[in-house]
Structure formats: C-alpha cells, structure tokens
Amino acid sequence: MREDILDSRQLLAFQTLARTGSFTLAAKQLNLTQSAISHSIKALEKDLDCSLISRLGRKIHLTQAGETLLATVDRMIRQMQNVRNEIDLLSKWGSGRLRIGAGSTACRYILPTVIREFRQSFPNCQLSIVPDDSKELIDLLRANEVDIAFTLIPPGLDDVHYQTVFSDSLQFVVSPMHPWAKRKIAPLNEIEDQPYVVYSKKSYTFDLVRKHFRREGHDLSNVIELGSMEAIKELVKIGLGVGVLAPWIVQKEVDEGSLFLLGLGRKKLKRDWGVCYLKGRQLSLMEETFIGLCESVCEGVG
Figure (cartoon, rainbow, N blue to C red):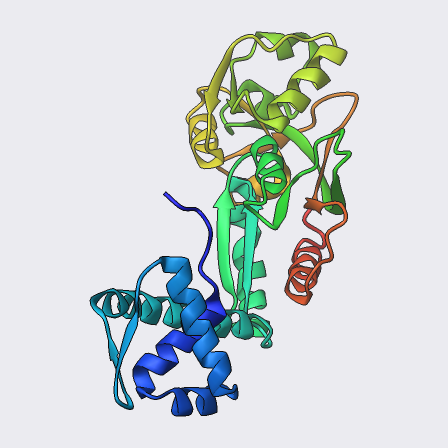
C-alpha cells in the first residue's frame, strides 16, 4: 500500500474541472492558466496511474475512477474548509478552549464562583474541568491533557511553574460530643490513640499529615481512608474518628455546631494552594484571567 499523499492543489484543480466541465472556467475560477489546469490533471492521473477524465469534443466527462475520486475529494475539501473556519474562530475574542485540572475540594468550594465570574468575560470559551488529586494533575499537565491545574503545590516541580494563590493550615476536626471538644484541647498523649478519618493515602495531603505527626513523635496507624471530604465530615460527625482538615472546608459545619475545630499541637501544618502550568508556556488572555479570578475569589480563604 502506497503511503505518499496526493497533492491538494491537484485535487482542487480536478474538483473545479469536474464541477465546471471546462478547462477555461476552471482556470478562471482558480485564477490559473488553462495549461496549469491541464498539467495538474495529467500529473494527478500519472500519480494515480489511471484516467480521470475523457474529452468528447469540448465536453469533459469523468471516468469511473474520476467519479470515485470526486466523491472523496468533495469530502476532503469540505473538511479542510471546516478546519479553516474552526481555526479562524479561535482568533476571535472569547473563543477557544480552556482545560482546567483541579482537586475535588477545589471543584466543590472554590471553582464554582471562579467559573461564574469567568463565564461573564468569556461566554463562548469551551471550558472543561478535570477533577483529580495533586500528583495526577501534574501528570496531566505534562501530558498536555490540561492547560492549568488548580491544586496543592507539591515539591520538586522543575518543569512546572506554580503561582501561589493562598495558604491554609490543617486542624483536628471532631464531633461536638468528642472528649477533646468538651476539653477544647487535643492532649498530646492521646493523639496516637485516636482513630482517624483521612483523605486518600495516595494524596499529597496525607503525605503532609503523616510526615507532620512523625516529626512530632506520633504514628497514626488506626485510620479510615476515604476519597471524599464530604464523607470524611459525615463520619467525624457521628464520632467514628478524628479528621485533619482545613477550617475553610468545615466552616459551615463549625458554624452549625456539628463539628468542632482544634489546633494540631505545638506546630502548624501549612499547605500552599496555587495554579500550575508548564514552564515556557505563553499564557493566553483567558488563562491569565482565570488565574486572576482564582486569586480574587480565594482572598481570605486561608
């Protein structure tokens, strides 16, 4: 099977000749000479090793091979025109696409407001949101499957540029009926004895929590692992364990009195949230606007 590609200019000359039925009209329509049209048809016939047209006096008729080729060429030309139109649309204000990767927590608590504001400026943007954990989002950036990731910023990103949006600190979260809530303190000698309800062990947050407590001399061995912040909060509410969450994630429940916040102890456990994109990329206006909105919406979150 031959792998060389047919000449698009020859195909356009053939299509125009087939539709007009005249070398003169085809040349005029394409702003070429009749000899140029004739040369293109002969070269195409030589390339395909078959006759595409037959001449009866001044009339042009397609051979069976010509009719078969014309049907294919018509589809090809339409597809090429559609591609040109689609690319032209990308240069118009507010068009194009923006692929955002974000953690499930950001998707629930932060991005709805950002997207609402973004849509007011770019209503025609093809916006897609890919939810995943921090480590996976960085892989998606590197694979060019997302343009920007809004996520916790992991260390060692030599090929990724990150821009901090806000910082938060994790705290113990317990049921109001928990002994710690009644004493309003988490005694250091009781920390290791508690059951904990934690976010996925594969997540960057769990790595931070584990390393923090190891530095403090504690080993959290009794854990229930979940992939949802909402599920974690529900289990903590009914007293099945202690959570380690950021205050802004549980603010509603704390205000309602269904959850209680306590400090982790002597040292804070801080996290940085931000937007990441591959180094060397020139950001579009839509991307810069999205990042600016993230910063504006997250003011005071931490």
